Length: 339
Image (cartoon, rainbow, N blue to C red; front, top):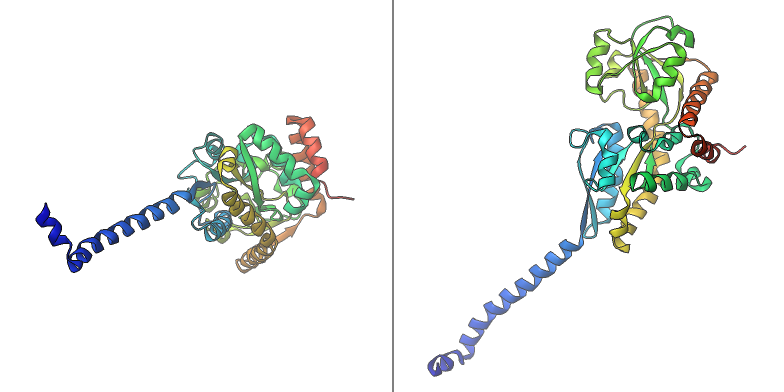
């Protein structure tokens, strides 16, 4: 031991011995600090009801990108996929159970749990106006109670639903649709029944073949996105005016939101505010692009007049009111345009 002590007392040898030790210690401290910073960053799991690369998936991705840009080192959102990852009709339940932290889905996919969600589709109020009237807060309260989820934000308002015809026909009025077979979704049921249209339930990826083979003579779909599946190439007419609104709600598990730090919640809240502020511009530009695309494809607009929209909206209010009279009537008052 004395010999060892004498040798290490050499200043040059001491530096050579301790230098690497200090470097290793410094590296260890940096590594620990790095892992701590990484541990502080929370990653939320999200899913969307359509493939993320399609029209209504892209808009959700805009919100996610904003969160991930501003939340570096604090909070991130990872989109696990679309319906191939978590079936669309199971995403709300996945948020409720905590399997997903966030889901971007229309209320029709959780209608059995919260029928009131569909009331939004019948309103002409913007999301900002819904927040001001108290309608959004009311929907949020119901979502917390039934789904254990918060209504973070909504997109699609101002994008109407339409009927599209894929055959050259003499159609000038609603009665001309009687007896035709249209691919639809539950939201079209009341309109189809009223005008004598036979509704056919076909999965979106299979619709092109059905239209091509004449299995159906038309379909119901919003103004945006008929090109996602190539349907625009087979479409001859669009029935105007559009009715209802596209509503896609971004739901978040409330317990997960509450578990976040104030800084992490601020990332989400700020992204929501920015997203909603920018959405009017985005909606206007995307609507123009959709109309231009349809015109370029030679899709002819056929105007049935304002009564067509009124009938559709009145029919659906009646259906919803039968399912939940008190709750729907309260929401209807909050979602109505001020006189």
